[in-house]
Length: 87
Image 1 (cartoon, rainbow, N blue to C red):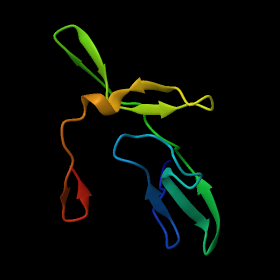
Image 2: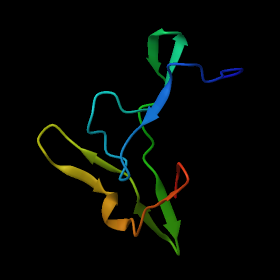
Image 3: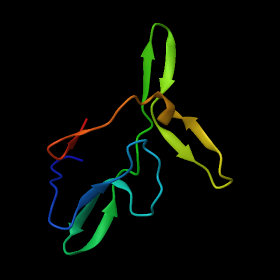
């Protein structure tokens, strides 16, 4: 996204476990033609960590049939905010 800059009307929204639970979740949703015309640029990332030859999911997905896979939320130990920055 060469030269892209956030503008008024854009936002990012999601959940701690990375699961898309609302239709307006996105990273980011940009107002490319403010104040209307919001465009979803990335819906989510499915993060994984590799440690000593093993791969661990950090993301979670809930599918239409209700199955949650991967279950990365089980590998998250804690969450807090430093100001408005998620850690």
